[in-house]
Image 1: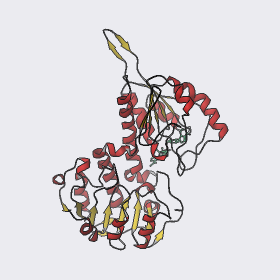
Image 2: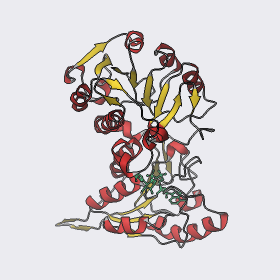
Image 3: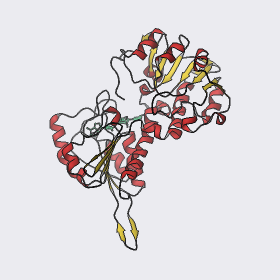
Length: 371
Ligand code: NAD
């Protein structure tokens, strides 16, 4: 079974879908590994660091032989055109039925497994790339915040006097938010967490932080949150304003599946923040959690800074690729055995992750899923 790994072409994408530590396992399953020359370079994995991989400078040759193509970002249409009919593609897709990429995959009868569709169930945790990448982003949000602040996170005592710890507020306590809480706590800040799902209270307390109780429960289905009603928004804002004003660093990560990022911090609330305070908005990709967020940019509003990076996992490309490649390896292990691809369509992980197969779109894929 020929497995091909592409060099990513999306702007600012530095990750790669195969790392040296995973090649041995794939070869044991029977894979013949082919990579595009220099595919790992941007994530600091030079070609020489890969064992048992044949490199191809020419992408068309690489794709023409491939039974399975691994990538991080959705590939361009010409990649689909260059693939064998009926071949397997595994990558993030983030697109619905009307998207040209999906249409082309249907025409070409590509079997596409979309990494964002991995079910959030215990058995699939090792394949859950959304979680592995979010955990790294949550950690990095604290680092980004710290470098934009003109003050320190921990209490520091000197002969000239002591500086108190910074106050950090994390809004949205999913995978990224909880990692941000843990990181800020480790760095010595006083940390508070807020979410609309009540389950998160216990999780945030176990990480040494406190929970901001707003009296609103917006637990949705499948462990996700639902949108707040206008009355709930007012109730939440009344409680949060004080916490926002007291914070030196706020990290926002709130997301609702299939919807734009909920707005958690208004322009008026930003005006009330401390001079020198920093917001890191990890939801910039979905439009951002602050009225003043400009996705992809760092904005100064008075003496408050809003940092809204896009594709944060790519900024940690080496570790992000390491985890992403392991997620893909775990998924491939379900279907690649003794040199043969056998797909068990009754397996809920397979059935949940497949997007297109044999010219048919998975049931329920009607509109683009939110990033
Ligand atoms: P996400 O990225 O969808 O959302 C981030 C957080 O924002 C969520 O905690 C959500 O409740 C919160 N949020 C939404 N609207 C908000 C608002 N108005 N104010 C404050 N917070 C708001 O979340 P995620 O990291 O993808 O995790 C989603 C769920 O999936 C969680 O329950 C998580 O524990 C669960 N999960 C389960 C598994 C598994 O069992 N294998 C793996 C990963 C995640």
